Length: 283
Image 1 (cartoon, rainbow, N blue to C red):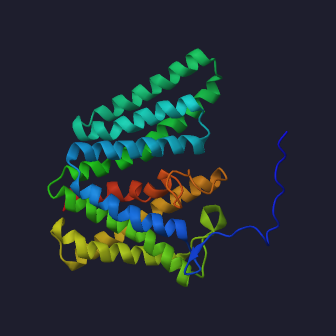
Image 2: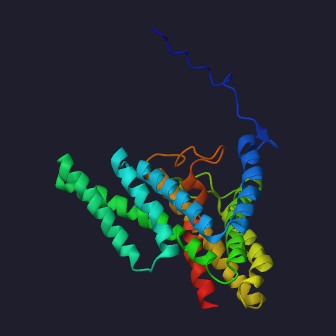
Image 3: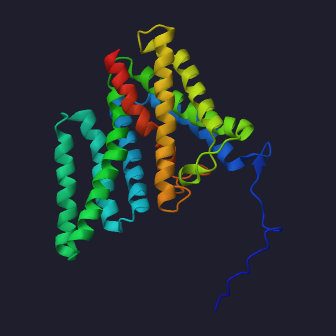
């Protein structure tokens, strides 16, 4: 019989390697390599392959949401399948396919319950969570596909990702260097108000630099757009933090080295994508 190894005292537990004494090395390396590579993919992939990539990301995100929500293995497969199909339907098909896909998900879940003999109340709770997960992750992420299909779609998507992920990075760096006032623990005690302000500022700067190719606005208009996108990015990040804290999780998964799960990486995009789509369509 193999015995468990005794736990090491905290004084001798190997610590994570940190960059500049603050940033986990694995996270810094994965960001430095993965972010530019992903931006290049966004710019070079043709429309159909781009939609397939977003659909894959949506399916993974829905799967992680199902795990956080406590859905069983079969329900996670069904919701992930619908979540992966939804962005493709938004790219290829008419918009009325959305309610059809949601109805299809309901039928899949109800069919599983019919043969599984589950309690009705339990089924209703599961189905509500599953439908919410698909709409929250896959439908909101699907607006990126719609943005890519617009005129100047490549430039629009680049602006969206730089403003969103730049805001996330700016919030993290500002919080580490200047953070003093922390958010409530029920949301995320590690984040600070200074970090949120720094993230919004970075999103505004990215918008002022990149959005003139997309939006026919003056500097004041671009400033307002940058503020809206920056605030949406921070709201998306905090919303997912609140979701994770409600179930006692630190990360949504471990798919991205040093970064957590897929949902941890796209949480801000879930809010900025529909906001950007509305702004581009309006202006």
